[in-house]
Length: 352
Ligand SMILES: [Zn+2]
Image 1 (tube, helix red, strand yellow):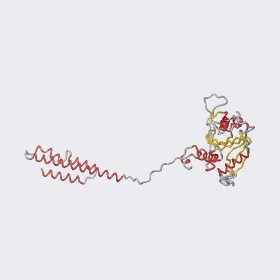
Image 2: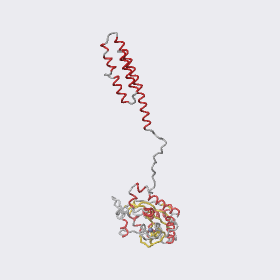
Image 3: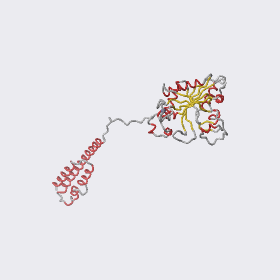
Image 4: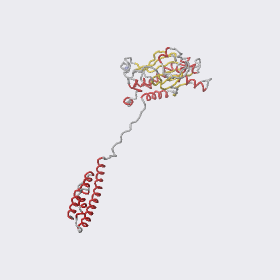
């Protein structure tokens, strides 16, 4: 019986040496130290042995049991260590790999274009004057020589604010940046009512119109507008300023032309075209074969508007001009659909 115990121990330890994973290790424990193992059968058979044999075999069996348990613990440690090393090897972390690039935000193409225009105007002495997006009918239309029922209002329907009973002076989202002209003039006059200072300002911002959204028109868009008011300002000043603006914006060699137009708030009024910078004036798809691109509207400030701003039209004159920012960006980048600007499509925005 003692020899049999030696044999049980040898076999068990031998089998244990080659085990390298947790699963096999557990099944070894069941086979060699579990209830139905050869060792446990020796323990349960002790009662059948003689009085002389029983203590010797019992003692020996206990030693074998301790030896197997100790060997199991040691092997178990080795198996766990090996498993850890394998997993470290497999999930190898290479700290020298380059990191994932952080995607950088950037300015919206409309903002980029607006800032470029404002920079040019700033070089020419125009200071930025920001004004309300929510306006009254008076500031948006009446003070600018659009009386109620004036047909030009049809071109600029807006979004009205409900719930205020203001009669014929309701609140609305401004349809152009021009109400800022009145606000800027009145602010300047307030500083010195008897001798109001000259004005040279740029009015940028979002405008709103209630109209069908198409490839060429949106319900919101940016405008920038320039206003110069002072003594002895003439149409020559307007032409010189805007021709210079055209050169700074589109290149030193670009030609410009002025066409007569009608706006309620200027008299006389004109539109300025620049020679198509895509085809150089020969005619192409962008300029619709005309060779010219319409850039802005302009004119001498109407006496009624000067009066409403607080400047005496007998003493002061002025000129104003305005342009759509998205339109400038569309020409510059050959964008065919204005809806891209507010569509929030990253594939469009990423290109600028
Ligand atoms: Zn062209």
